Image (cartoon, rainbow, N blue to C red):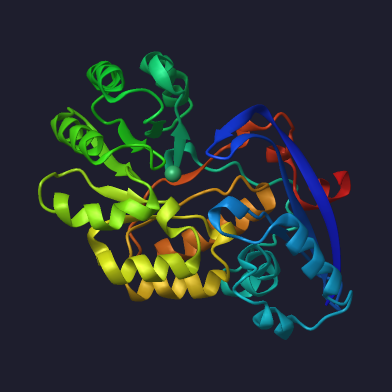
Length: 330
Ligand SMILES: [Mg+2]
């Protein structure tokens, strides 16, 4: 197998607010593999170090150590300390397991069906009308980020939103760990009263507090709780599962969760309730992650809308490019 590596830089339309300050440019690596028969396949390394992955520099150093001609078996030897590399190099294996992460010959990737795709709503009061265009575009599941303002005024906006929205609109609330225990209880009570489906409240408390808090609210609310930041790496997913089992929904970002086959096996074996989600990767990594989700759905995993509706966050046209065309732009 021949390997070539090219770095990419994608500026966000507007810097994303993160707990670590503004994030202006998504950077990563695209891998191009070619076997002896000339078959080409692409992979992507999209690290998120503040979620516990390797840094871009560590990923690049790893790629520099891989010989330009390598044997696919070597992929099994990538250590767990490099989960984004495990995913990227795993594209070679996944094309067999999930039958085509690599679909190269297609002129352009099919845009994902909005019905299966959760759309991100604007934060704050802009949400009250902000869902309409996305609804008309075919989305039925929406995510709204909360915990960005005090609880009371945010709950007031939420009440207006659910009163105005169609009853078959499904809503996910994501607090990114920004609520207190009291705030989270107030939100769950309000969600239980909503006239439409609140799929879950995601990561109400930060990872270091939420596992002790979960038993306290057990059985008190109908609305489900999802974990995202708590289960960023595969190891964290295993550890959290041992403590809370199937009492929560798991939000998993395949691009940073290491080997996809191991992730697939774990999800199926324990019958996890999973939402697959983006790590803000390019369409190359996204297609590989979505292929994993498709495969698990066909094997009986409950189908929840995917968290990959992120193309509009970037100013480029990469969402419309085939893997080959994207590679040629780098
Ligand atoms: Mg989240």
